[in-house]
Length: 122
Image (cartoon, rainbow, N blue to C red):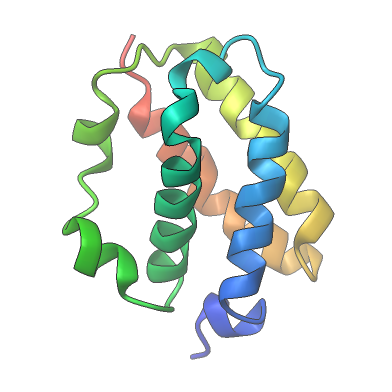
């Protein structure tokens, strides 16, 4: 089985995906306050490297951060249905714009939708 990482062309795809996602977050009144200005570059890096690792690529995320523990890492943020939906809107837009095929887009979203729901904490 070929990893999605290889199908999409590797690291560059995930960097572009995360950049497109954060383009939407930048002007979002619900999500933007969750991303402190001083850590935007760090947040981009962490998401990109997490996605690369998750989808079969570079182990940088695990080397730098260890186990993802996504729910625990997001506890400080009040993530309600609105925040979840806004996050999914920006990620779905990025996926739609960049996924090389509809099948790849569906595979990505089949992860993002339940992951976003799992992080909802209010």
